[in-house]
Image (cartoon, rainbow, N blue to C red):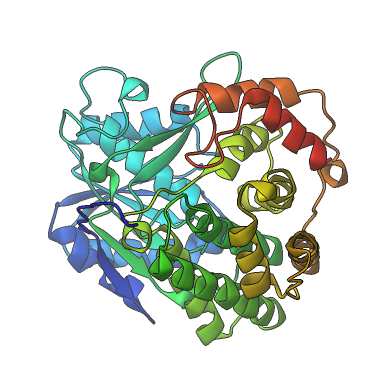
Length: 392
């Protein structure tokens, strides 16, 4: 049965064509100074020019920090914090995808943090002022535009370590989502984002909460929506309706209202993140490899739920005499779908061997809550290594 919950959603969502033109008026509500933060890509030049004009027309002084990379680095965030402190900036604006959004959130958290922001505890009120912050989303996938999470890679030690920070203060004050801004995305990024969205729905779907029918229905609809629309977008990148549907699925997958009152798993993300950081890979691409391997390893723990998923989301035929065959067909269909997007389904396809499996599995366990990865799967280090080997 559903657990008790309290849900507050403080982010103002501004969705649709030309909505990025409203950014100046939105930022002006919070500050007369703004740091815009992005990855520096040439594809953003026209958008950044429009954003700067909108901000300046609203009377907002503009500062800028580019250079964000996938798996955003703490060192760059510290640079952003210093810019904000030195110039008394009270607003940070992300222009980009999940990595830029996560970097922006952490700059907002750390600018006035009393101590080292890397030591800030999760799931607790932030004990210092957090700057106001917003985003213009240019990539559907991570759902960071609506989440209370910031993924940060500490690149200041011998090994890079990725850590998730959770705090309600990390939610954006507003997010602007204009589907037209995603038209120019490369096919690989579009495909990887689609797999990321599906994975987010799955992390909530495979819950230990019984009879969470709203969650099941929303997740199944979301996954099938993404499967349909990503194919349309890859054929016609300027299909507005398909782009809009994918962007909506991206934030629904991470909207706490969908899974409120349930226990989500997040095991796959837990053991995937160290692999992505260690091998400098793409998050969605790695999820396309890791998710089927995880399914192969854990499906016997909840055959009825995996059967439902494989039938309703990946077209498996129900075998009432042997539901395991249904699940295996569904996993095979999942892999075929990933391959149809032009993405790999095996680590060996991206030249990864087993030499760092022990390190990645240990990192996953070290970053977990309670020594096991996943709130439902509850995977040990040894089990994670077995899943990695299934993904070879």
